[in-house]
Length: 98
Image 1: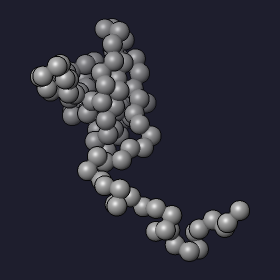
Image 2 (image 1 turned 180 degrees about the vertical axis):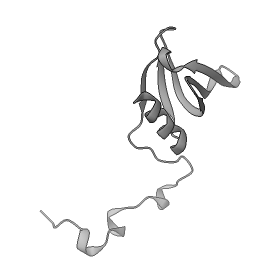
Image 3 (image 1 turned 180 degrees about the horizontal axis):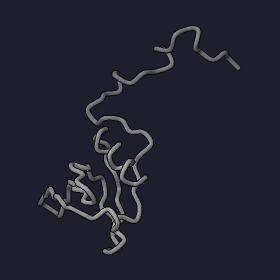
Image 4 (image 1 turned 60 degrees about the vertical axis):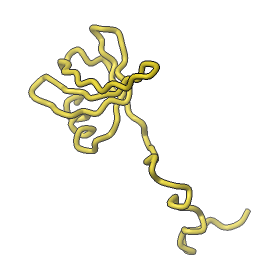
């Protein structure tokens, strides 16, 4: 089950939060960049004061305690004008006035 979910996140290129059971720590907003057998390679960014670092870490599938992701997210390059609003909704799908 976990392997299938990780493969789905890999295919969709969705950011994930992974809890490593053996190290008792979270890896936040990582991308699954490779899955080979029971090894999962994660890529994530880390900012420390003036430095910005990108890390790649391979972890065993059995050391992953939990995986979570956002249900929905908006791309940061999307502007307010690009977002769909109720005015963009077809007349047949609009809710009536209360």
